[in-house]
Image 1 (cartoon, rainbow, N blue to C red):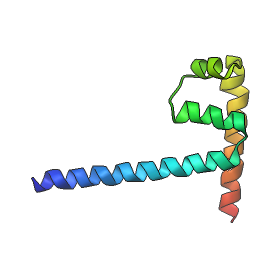
Image 2 (image 1 turned 90 degrees about the horizontal axis):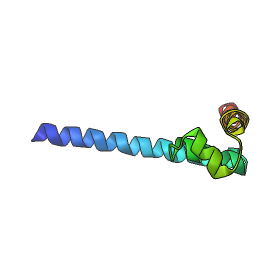
Image 3 (image 1 turned 120 degrees about the horizontal axis):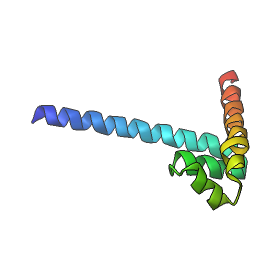
Image 4 (image 1 turned 90 degrees about the vertical axis):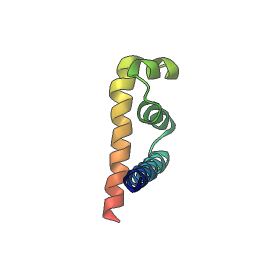
Length: 87
């Protein structure tokens, strides 16, 4: 019984840590990215949508969503991370 409680506590701690990481990522995206990039990143990485679904939902060509816009979004996030590391 004690072992089960220990495992449950470890699982709860891991879930809490995951939630904290997710909140941190969302805050970074919210402050670093433009509106289209925020929508794209949320749909892809928090709602787990496929590129095709995102393209239809955002009314953009698949190639733009999976290539250009995604690269722009990642560049914005990377810039914000670089700025954070310099502080």
